[in-house]
Image (cartoon, rainbow, N blue to C red):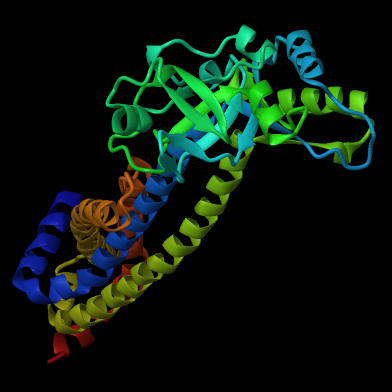
Length: 398
């Protein structure tokens, strides 16, 4: 018997009992759809995390001076020297000083505004651009200038778009606005990425009483060199400080990879749990095929009496089980795409995050191939039972 004939007979038998065939496919449909949605959520979470970390800078290293276990210090000039001496790995540096000073515009206090002291290269490192005015310069750092750059939210809400040249107060000191950042978020909110003030790190260190900055942001020449660059930086710091406890080097890329691995583990476990329904669906296929063999015992007897070989009977029932499972897999894939679209809308609406549930082509191929394989595996036992029927006993079956 040719394969095309076996497929035709399989489709004919499925059409003759549509309801039973659909109920048989249901476990496969639900399993495939569930696996696709779960993997899609995992991909969406990974993409969202990557986007979030790219905003923080996956091409940067952050150095925090803890000062533990040593009386030695690393100055700002020392850090610039390290960057210059290792230009193969590092292309930029900015000291950063986080402040908790109160920001005032006139008589109004901006309680949610974040204030950070940075170097002249900070905007280039972070990829920020200016909408108005100029950026911070080396002269501002050297003179501890009382100048600042404000976010678009401050410019729009508190200065009506005309903040350059205006003044605000930080910790009681008057600062002149010299620049305005481009808008960072689609919707500007109080306390968001556009509600910020940047000033020279030297000025911030003086106002906060820190003296020497304890945090540095370093731009890498190549994100792929993160691991090697981190080792080089740690070696340079150790040479100067003679203590592993005196500093901490953090890579956003490394943190991202760790979190991605954790997400993948969780998603894999959930996908395996969802995949159990595929096994349940396979058991359902085996059960219905056993019933089908019993119902078609006389048919099998007639076919064998007419000369049909065991392998033909075996292949017919295996193909029928595989077709049922494959059709269920195809329906499950369509349902998986539909549920993924619904999940994207629900997540975006309820959690207010830009995350897209996107099943991968690999997961779709695995799901479809797995569904067909389940049909073959669980359909083999009933098919073998049919193939081994004695034609005389089969013809006598009522």
